[in-house]
Image (cartoon, rainbow, N blue to C red; front, side, top):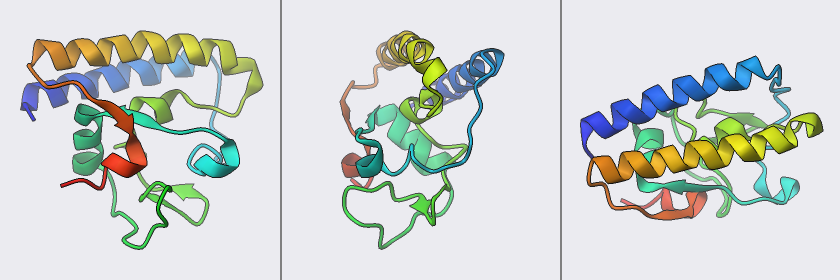
Length: 134
């Protein structure tokens, strides 16, 4: 994975953090975003984002059940710095739902552009299944 593509992704994540903060939404640390089955959603990410997670994440849970995030344990995310875009825009706050969708779409387009600019093949797939790939 090109180092400059990863640096650019990191800058994009920082920009997003600022924009989310400006919206006044906050994480209540309930862990629902990581408990995909309970939340009724699936997490998708690109290969660039999966590389970011592996290089910027904490220690994975080796025996995490299939279908769950390998960094989710005891109701807490242990991938804060390495989490993909979908995690960074997902909040349980219902008043943020519309803005969450707009941010996700706009920033995802920019992730695709990073892939294109740096010649990184684009694949958007289920995070919990593909993050364990070699």
